[in-house]
Image 1: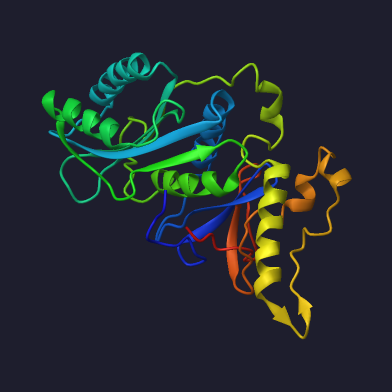
Image 2: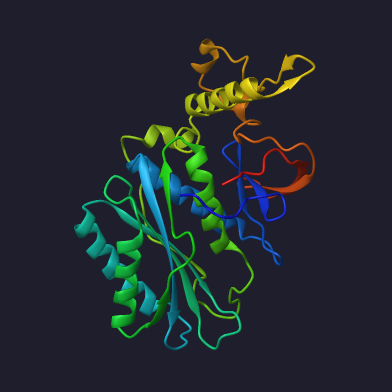
Length: 289
């Protein structure tokens, strides 16, 4: 889905997952919950192990009254997952964040994920969720701008915008710290047995062959339009041979060129999903949506 804003060095951080960098939301204060953020990545990867296309739909749920637990929401979402599973005949999962800012009541940022082969637009789905939430007297529901994304297995170009949007849910700001209720909510989801062998490499999120072809296409466009002292500009991946494409660790060659747009300067904080450390490295590529 086309968005009206750009993911830049100003509003994003680089987050490392399985040797690849992804732009995630950069909070103005308090930073990210890296454990929850990693779980978001794993959850999306798990859904992509089941379906080569996964729709991510967003909606906001405000509560009618404040509660120190999430029982009301959990009962609601359990019922909705059952309804949607039968309605679309596919697995349905969710990622949710509980927050409380200046209001006396708390609210939920909800994302629902399901097969992109069964549904390609979020309008009917979000209206259905809004009606269900409000008709049960649980509070009010509101739509968000750019409410859905369609992730395609192995195609980082379609996955990164969705991950960026979902990473907003894992920010530490506005999360409650003085209650026992969980701030980050996920349903249980197992990897597909068919794709299980791929969970340990990067092909569900970043397919080397797809990345190579995308970079090659951009290179050809640049070669036809840009010239410097009579020498055509070449992408760094243009020298990769078809033999190299067959090597299982090709992603190590492509790790610096997953993003199609290469930034020339600037510094970004890098958050690693494995050791949770923060370091600095050159800004490689503000993703333009």
